Image (cartoon, rainbow, N blue to C red; front, side, top):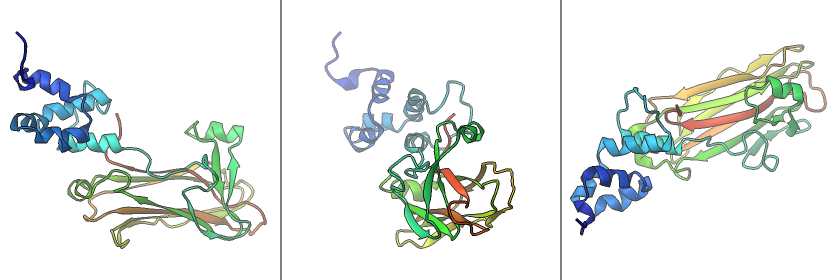
Length: 256
């Protein structure tokens, strides 16, 4: 028997159709069509199916999820919010060179041996500092990146920050990092600023990761400010200060 109205389809079929509709269209358009569609779109089942379809969860997923709709959006938005983190772009594109001392910031290639040691084989370059302090920064506009105000203020998802740094084996150096959560007026609502890492001359020159997760921060976060850099402690001409690369800011639950 032919179906004259789409609403005459079994609910399970409608749910399956909705899994193929972009999430924002579901909420902004489809949910407003009628009470049946609204009720179906609000079902946990739909958002769990969409998560499974997109690969955000696995078939045997057994971790508790407070709100599957929010979970879906956070997973779909999750990516590195820092642009040009590994110097693969046009030099210092997207970065503000706040302090550019000595012989100034420079981009260098990872050597073959360094690539073997670095945990991410996609990273091929790094930024390197000089004999006077070099600091560079980037501001992440959360709304521009897709994180609307209600999502940030109601859910307050974890914000994870990571950075990688290394010294040269022949020169001592100092590495520093500061990350701040900022309000719409750029007032700080949370700060991560570990003590500067002092690396002695003739160190192992291994790459080291520094990370921090912002949790339970106050509502009102609209921007994230990330600044890192350092200086060599022997004041040698050239680029003997700490090297930095593979920096990242991610929001929400990690992918399985």
